[in-house]
Image (cartoon, rainbow, N blue to C red; front, side, top):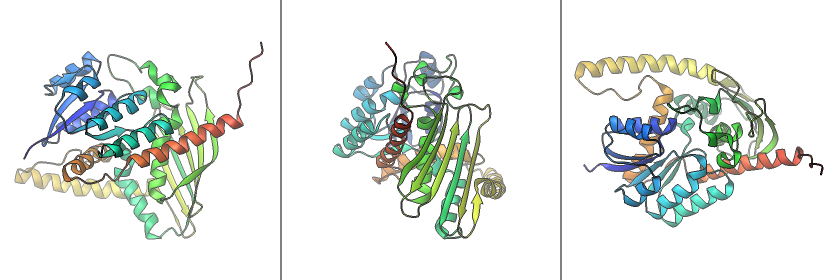
Length: 348
């Protein structure tokens, strides 16, 4: 069977994660591009033979079928559109683009060139979130009236990759498209849209600047969903050392939380996977990558799904349109904040 040829553009923390996962898939041949000599050296040490210092050179010269784009946000549009023009199927890490305009450009280019486009919303591949979705769709909660979702951590301050600290572009809103709302909020918004299978509008937005950065380090966003009228309150921040994630769902017939489901899932999963792994070792079979780590497994599964779609000529479960709809809500929230909190005109 011929190997699928994949180019990875960008080897920051998430690019390194995707590279490791690609190397665990034996039916792939991987090529990489990054400006960092240190990152390329690490890739060579991991067995990558073909490396480029410029992603455009990779797209122009390398023999590949698909790309995994993990470049900085401000390069998503240019790299994705160039890949589409080359006829390559595309996986783009979130956010799809910095603005609605950029997202529209990427989606149009993918459609025009008839290539697949998937956005890296790995939360959809977490077993706990799939259990939440199944619970909602079963009707056990009745009509879902309220969802509270919190993700608090160190955000951009955890994006370190030796030997450099956090890249300067992360602190430029023009290059990122925004702060905590863009970086963390896009995952949360997509998760809510997917859980409820519904479209939403912005009801309330608050942006906080605890560290006096040029972009927000705290955000509170309230969304109202159209069909059921569900209110989702999303709270995100970059101000904590440890990462905390909570989801609570309240319906007319009952309630549930991520904590309740995770406890049950984790115990059952650990027992099931542990027994299966012991059996596989005894039989001399290979153990599935990250079988005991749900989050790492989700990152692996999303890439595996994308590559399966490329090989089987199927549309991905997460589309470019999903990335675009997320961008629309984020842009709506930023514009609402600007209208309600106008900057005072400077005196001359």
